[in-house]
Each structure stands twice: as C-alpha cells, then as structure tokens.
Length: 41
Image (cartoon, rainbow, N blue to C red; front, side, top):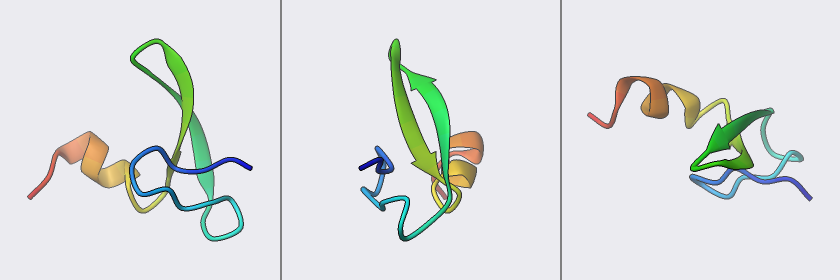
C-alpha cells in the first residue's frame, strides 16, 4: 500500500502524488506537499 513518506498517510486516507526524493520514487500526500514546497513555518 502506498503511503506518504512524510506523515505515513495511506492512499485510503488522502490523495498521494508520486515524486523522486534522494533518487528514490516515493509518495507525498496533498497535506504535506505545501510544507515541502514552502518549508516548515
């Protein structure tokens, strides 16, 4: 089952997007994506 590499949410809980991180294909959820783009506040 696919899960967000930041918060571990699964594709049953949230929409996940595929990405490359440190040379590996991973998934990030739509809730964590803004934090990755803009940085933590």
